Length: 352
Image 1: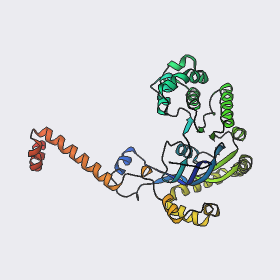
Image 2: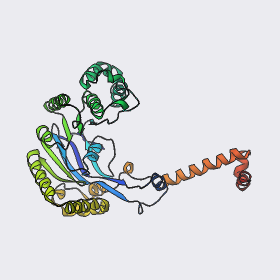
Image 3: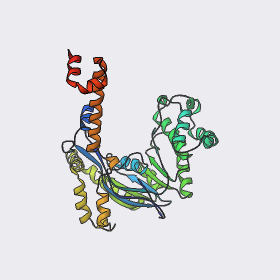
């Protein structure tokens, strides 16, 4: 995630992708660490080249059916996960609010407040000044002294929301955090979001509750099976999204299943080469006017989001073998110098 400088754009996504490996068993994931090729590893592209610009002070809705990539995109904006390729540029400090995000279940609510606040960069003095307001906003009563593992989903959401909004973020990402809890707390959250809007903060609001999006958001991004299907004024995008939902519901169960399967297969079969071809053909993407160098950079895999490199895998393998050898030496009763000079003898002694 890059930092924007001297720009009225708060968030800029350029051809952002995210690939997840589809392992059937945990052992497959361990085995993959030693593979030098990705060819036999099935994958799924949660994002297939998302591009958009959000200016300072805008509130953006993120809508789409389940599996469309909304939460993946919000996590990349928040810096929780890196993209596989593309560029996510951020001008400011983002914070995400989702149900229980970042809360440690074994710790009490009070301990979680201090931990999350410290992790977000606040000092102990700042936390002491704000902790009473955080506790009051969460309105958890005596449960604030209980382990979070005993909280309901609504209580976890209230605590997470309260901590995040009192951190005074530049960019607020809200991922379904208002979908739980009672009406009183919901209105309190809405009032806080509207207060942030008046202060000119940038807000991303992920929700299936379309009325909430219409009320809180100036613009909306419609995510559809990993891609940005539409981005524009909320009323306009919402009208088209509702038309799609209405069309989809009129399909038979068999037709719905076929459509969903085709879309998901497209996410499995997607490649960065496919994205390159799309950039060349898509008029909207061509408007970004990327140079050949910029295009190549945005189509290259991000090291943090990729697998271990071949040298790293080799080093890991050597380290494991060296560890095993040292364990064998310790069981043999001989010195390491002797073992290095007579490895076959050491191995024979151990297995005799």
